Length: 269
Ligand code: F6R
Image (cartoon, rainbow, N blue to C red; front, top):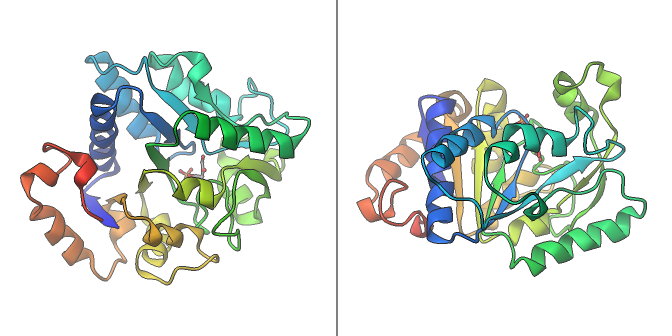
């Protein structure tokens, strides 16, 4: 796992955007796995700026991690709406190449299999962008989710519903169920980047980076993936016991291995 700390969330998001941009430059038909929530918003703003400066997304395909069950795509709190407003409306990705689970699917099980099949048919994910829940979830894989799980229906924890209530008018409007890529689906991605910002994420960052691999902290499974880069701001990194070492590694990377250098894809984990 590569840990990159930055003084601010904006700087961390800028670096993460460069990582994604380099991938898209190297592989114009890249398949991107995307996340919603507060964390990736600045990363998306950076990608929009890079697009305005010429970065072409016309051959890119995207798959989002999750969607609430029961929310129509145009519902103000649906993840489809969030993605349209925060990213897709501002890039030149063809609309039909942007995929989210359907929160209104009649046969949820069949829909989950179709979602898995569509990812496979697109060639698999080149990079999955992740945030982390304060309870350690990735996607909406809550604690005790199988580390081998595939796309399926999940029940949100009360903690996640409380954390996400800020996006809704009333807390009780937060849906109880969602469709989420599984942990196995996420781990199949060729590369993974995780972003975490703020003091409220410091404890869970310490748990998934430096604690044991356990289904009680789903994000800890990332320790088993060969190409994970974690972008943190100072506050989120504040409880890491090996912080000095991570910063030392980053400062001493050969230039060709850095995000600004020749090939982000070879950054070691
Ligand atoms: C969102 C998702 C979630 C969020 C996590 C953190 O698609 O899958 O895992 O990344 O809940 O949310 P924020 O960024 O709002 O703290």
